[in-house]
Amino acid sequence: MNLSINFKKGMYLMLALALGSLTGCDDDPANNGLTASSVDASFTVTPVAGAVNTYLLTAQPKGVIASKWNTGDGTYQGKMIETISLPDAGTYTITHTAIAAGGATANATAQVVVANSDPAKGNLVKGGSFVTAEDRANWKKVIYNAGADWTYSDKGATVSGGHAGIYQAIDVVKDREYTIDMTISGGASSDMWFEVYAGKSDPATTSGDYKDGGTVMGLNTWGGCGNAPVSGKLSAIGCVKNASKDAISNVVKFDITGKVYLMIRSGGGIAAGGITIKSVEFRGK
Image (cartoon, rainbow, N blue to C red; front, side, top):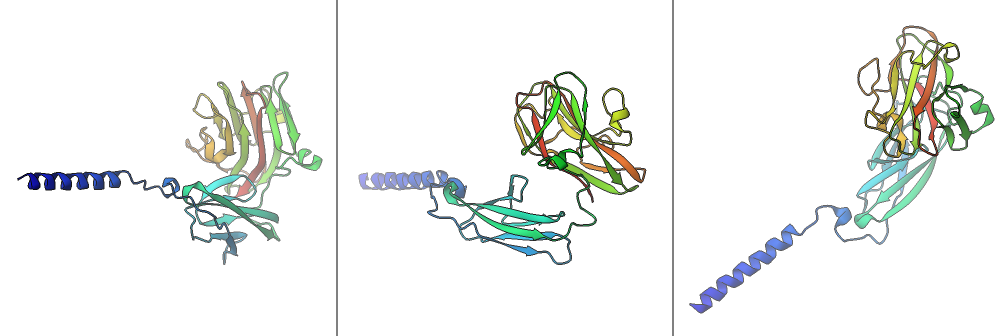
């Protein structure tokens, strides 16, 4: 009788231990306590047949559980097989960050030389990097209150001190769709707005706040974005609706062939250090 009881207790103990082992498993390979001793971040770059300035990035898969990529505008979470578009002529350094078990990482880079800009998707903005004096000369300022200003550096264009805008004219074609975007970074604020417009009236001749065409996109702390430090593409992190679509979208279309004005302006309690933009784009779809 005692042997039977002890046998049953032993069975229950083994079952409990087994269940404990199962429930203690971590299904996330990045947090399972197994750290890779080395990571191979190598990848290949292959032009996509039939697509202009489009490339396939393929990371070697052995031991890699996640990939991050940087094509020049900042690092983003991607896939191990990623398709990218490089519509503008130039030399690009592509960086792949491979992530392995336990969070181990490694980087690999490759250069891609784009000989010619895509005639359909080339950037219509001039000087969108703000790096050189020639870049900066393409932009004009509108200062709405004393103490506000846009300043330029090799990091981009920075607005500080309150209400101010920069703009330039863009030639567009009637009824064609375009996308607008830029990389944005800056500190948090409790009462700040940052807005992008594409209107037909020249900001230099417009009295008061520029609102022609309605907002395309932006940040607005009352709308729920810009309260914390931001970094990334405005199209991805903005919360201001596109006025023509009543939804979050960076797509615009015009009823004229001719000049429109890309206007970027900000106001309110901008955090110390300001808001910086670079890689400003206005492209045909």
